[in-house]
Amino acid sequence: MNFKIRHSVIFKLNHPKGSPEAKAFFEEARKLAAIEGVNRFESLLEVSPKNNFDYGLSMEFDSPQAYKAYQNDPSHSSFVQDFWIPNVKEFLEIDFELME
Image 1 (cartoon, rainbow, N blue to C red):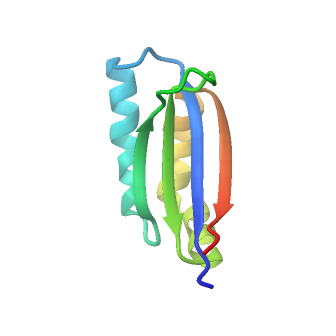
Image 2: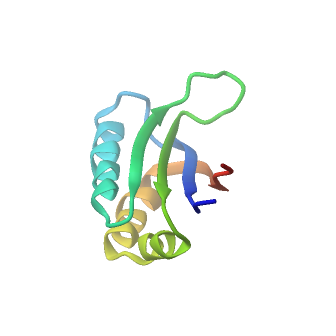
């Protein structure tokens, strides 16, 4: 079995859906896809009324080392400090190992 991890966060922003601030947040979030080891990066819009979250970000990694490198990458750290913390109201992080 090949190791893969899907790193996902579901969240609510401090800004209304479709606002300039929300658009700017996602423009910055898309830059995370350029970090080495990130695969299948997706920005997601929640459509279910079953939870209070509005958005999601999801990506996959091929190894524990790739995931750890992403977590320690300066671009990821900057995004968290400069965009995530000031703009995200609440979130849930889920990391799944894919079963094959």
